[in-house]
Image 1: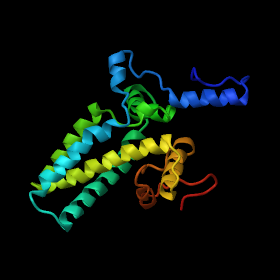
Image 2: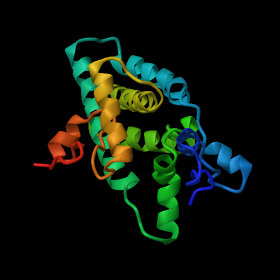
Image 3: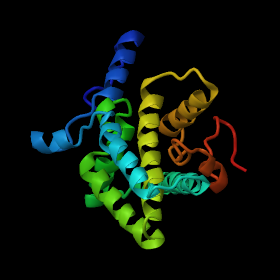
Length: 223
């Protein structure tokens, strides 16, 4: 049992406060304070780090031209990100070995977020992981699309990643007023607290509908 778990003798208000603290305050992942610090990231970091890169790639990829083709390539890059988000979340983040180093890796990559989903510094991917992944995808796009097309596709892809991290933070730490925001929050909260085998599209839940993993309310059955 977690050291933050509420005692059975606590009053409901105290139990609720203890549960809220457990969801928010995750323990260190490493004994080394330096290593553990690298796993805690302020949610503004992706915007500050990748925002300028997106703008630079877009400007570099335009080569003096504009038009519908650029918009189409941006949309393509964004769509590729949403597919990556869905399958990365479904196949990698929720691959859960029962023991050994695989179990430890799962906890480091995603398990700690499910154990403590309201910790604001464990909601976005650390740059130590996101930068190598961005470089790998950039290389893939360069090989697949060539110059200068890959740059615009990469801008859409990385822009989609920044949007995903921002949305992920907001659905955990705000109560959206609009219907889209409320729907995204509800679906993601159901993924965390009701059924973590569904609802893998955080910013793009339409892929859940396409691949049959839409979050259902309790008692509903998937078609």
